[in-house]
Length: 289
Length: 258
Image (tube, rainbow over the protein chains, first blue to last red):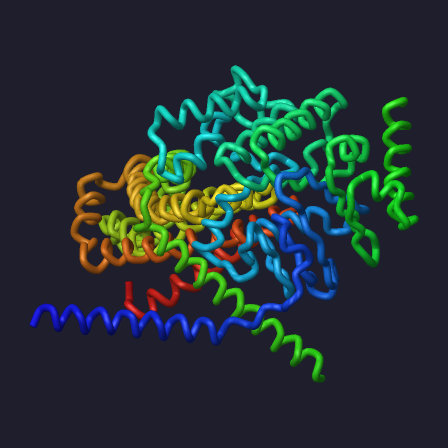
């Protein structure tokens, strides 16, 4: 009697989940067949995005290889930071696919998105640290929320991360009490404390002095080399970009140009050559001033 | 002729959509309440910010309103030789109507606007997106403790407002105008019924607390990520919150007679 009941219950459960799977598969729109580069860590495939009547991307396709530092360049308002937000699932495109480590972000929602974001770390332009939490708590928060570590392990992880990003004796300070460079380093610490496989950095050099820029640049290169993290960076600072980047994605008015910095500087696309050389000239003039 | 009609239709649809968004937001907040971890620390911090820091404005306003009621009531009642009912007049006015409504309006101006501005600033400075990217639900961590704290402090502050108002009426009526203190206090005691008056007042303040907590947090959460957007959201919290309190006060009184 009992075994028959269990058997029926098991069958019922299997039938139920099979029906759920069928229904959800039937409701899911078919995925477009083209993939830009199947070996890439992050792929944007024919992404269309518009805010009302303002079109940001009509059909953006680009890819970011694993374990490399890729830099997104482009004019103001070309949608560089938007690409990072699309990858992080903070914005949803109207069409297209965004594959992050093999998962299509555009099809994820709620819990799926939360789990996917554990693979990502994001350094926001303004730091985005919680202004009512001190430096220590800002870094400890993601670890406490994951609920996997003991308090002692959390303290050790936070201290190790703060040392790694070169911030000492600032645990008790609030974000408002930090200098620009320090704030950026603490934010970088928060972005990497969860051991992400992909690090997204939105304008990490903006508003910093040349010494601080070099420091952040060195930190990012070290993080990439030591842990093999894929870094996708948005920057206006061409000299740093050319020093760090192993791949450049250049957003031009009507197209995207991709390649290594050397390829773009000596390549066939005159607009890409002009963009990079003007950036270097501007930076040289600013540094002389 | 068609344009104003289509404009009206468009605005109506916008309003319905806004209400739908707000209801969906309120549901998300409610769903996070029983979800672990329970955020006692942030909740207590919000209770302090919204409740304890609102005590001076509530006490002073309650006292002032009670004193005005005491003076106006005295001058009216003395014409009919019914000054001994002054306590009842002050108490009933405060408990049934002025306490919950004025308390809610004061809380909208003080705590509601502060809550909206704080959440709006967090939106504008990417703090909520930063939490999302760290796989933390910003509604669970930031919004729910604020909404719950606002909901919890409303009946408490309303009660305090009423007590201060009754003492204000006592100061004006007994201290300044020379009424008998015994008849003032016995009039308060005999004319106020717990089931009809006090429970009704509590129901009103709980409903106002729920409405204001949703309005204030929703306006902040959906504010445009600019300083202008935060300012507009803060203003709209005060305007929408005040109008909602007054309209719902009429509805509650008309439907349940409290």
